[in-house]
Amino acid sequence: MNERVKYLQSINPFSLLPVEVLQVVAGQLEEVTYHKDKIIYQQEVSKLKGVDIIVEGEYESFFYDSVQNKRLTEHHEPGFCYGGVSVLLNRRQSLRTVIAKKGTVIYFLHRRHFRLLCKEYEDFFLYFTTEFGKRMQNEEFVHFFKRPAALEENYLEADQLYSRKVESIEYRPIVQCHGSTPIYEAARQMAAHKVSCLFVTDEQQRIFGYVTDITLRDKVIARQKNAADNVNTVMDNPIVSINVEAYVYEALLMMFSTKTRYLLVEKQGEFIGFLSRNKLLSEQAQSPLVFIQSVKSALSDDELKRKWDSVPHFVNQLLERGVNAQIANQVVTTIADTIAQKVIEGVIEQVGTPPAKFVFMVLGSEGRKEQTFKTDQDNAIIYEDKANEHREEVREYFLEFATQVSGRLNSIGIAYCTGGFMAQNPKWTHSLSHWKRNYVSWMAESLPETVIHFSTFFDCRFVYGDATIMDELKVFLNEELQKPMDKLFYNMTINALQYEPPLTFFNNIRTFTKNSREVFDIKKAMTPIVDLVRVYALKNRVFEVNTGERMKALRKIDVFTETAYNELYQSYYFLMSMRLKNQATQIIHDKKEPDNYIDLSNLTKIERVTLKEIFKVIGNFQSKIKIDFTNSL
Image (cartoon, rainbow, N blue to C red; front, side):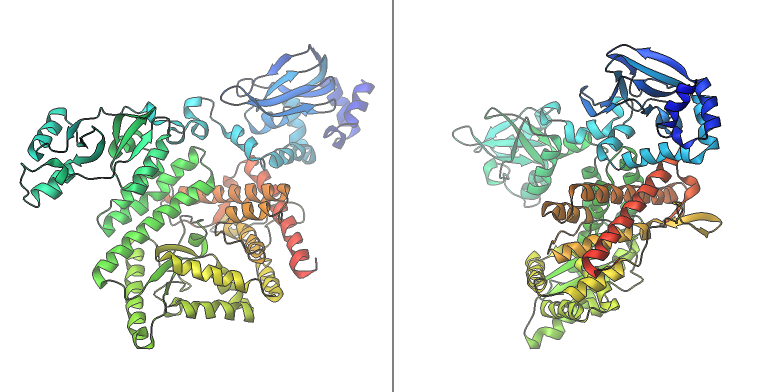
């Protein structure tokens, strides 16, 4: 008995318990011996009856992936306690597969005794939850931990859009005719074969065009063309093909980029069939590309509003399927961009062709491709410089243009910016030369107000217009940032450090009361990462706009270590996922306007522990940037 007590005193977390408690625990232990290569627990199958304390030998633990490869293998030596996290946080289900690698002896402690210790001694309990929180910073661990039991449900591994190949789709046989075939005969063949696309061949029997139902409508019936004319006089081209080994998403992207509705399927140099866009999209009913295409096809602002209103439901489904928050952000952003482009094109039809080249750019979270469901308009216009006699005319056009765009976006549900950061504000619609002066002024003055402006407008991204204008602005900024900018970076850092992680001295999450709920502001919790990564990006002239992409670029040039990069990246997107899910729940289930307040009572133990570790990471990051840019702690 005394030997067991001494052993428990020498290992964590039992060393945290009083001696008199260890004496009781020693009497509750059961000694068990396992032979070499004995399977102790199976991932997602075995239910743990308690925890194992290794005395002699070794445990090997790992995850099996979908093809039974070992992943994240770990070896556990004497003194290690296995099973605490599974018992406390995973409904007793073993997280990993465990094998005894040697003649292994363990002390087994039943779960009822273990849980009683956790209930009575907080430090003992925190040992397991803290260790789990650290593991949740590992993206691969999170992936396997969240993986559904059935492979069919595992969208991270088996999402059809990204894993299916073209050969798995039932493509239609090619129906073709010679270019000299009369149009009416081509239409008869299409009707007889029940196809909407007929391919046209030349003298060498090579396909060089095609005719569709739309071709017959637009080029024959609408123009009252003679149906006896050769079909090659109305056919469409070019021919677009894809290899049978390509993935379905590649086929869809090819269709969107080439604006074709039909793809010939090629195998070993020969065409073996064809696919229509409708066929591919019907195969991917839950794909983001389908939803984006439906937005592109919207015919009115009312239809666009209905699409925008349904985005939280759609994106929440992606998150529930395990899609990374960065991808979810990009989906929201792409939909918002598509709506903006549709609105801009509609306004141009109404007010006439622009009198100058211009770019409509988005700013802030939309500029960073990090939109959530609580978002408003942040945009601006840059137009090319014109001769003096045309300046007022050009400016008048774009201010009217911007007012109409902002108004229509607001009616669709992308609300006006309360801070006035919109193109309809005369301050944010100007010529390229004026914008250059703005940036120079903000960098030179480096006052608190101008630092905020510069930060907002550094997160800018092209949405519509002439991209060369934006390119010229970036070249200009790149040159300016090579000049001494210590004051600018100092003030940007000071501005960024005003937000502190909501963690108390005693390692608890700091909350405040809002509508009788104990909450914290997750947007403010994320802000230090966004702001401080931006400072490093500016300092190193990294012109990626997305926070995650900035982190990757800074890692490539060794501004961040591999460890710092992984910690920041995982922390940021864990918070983003929590933020999106919370807002989606408020919209879908609570039927209320979304906000950025997270109610602690709604969080699991796992989420609380992970948040504490994330806030520590942010605090350490802030300490580093204080040294790098302010020379102080």
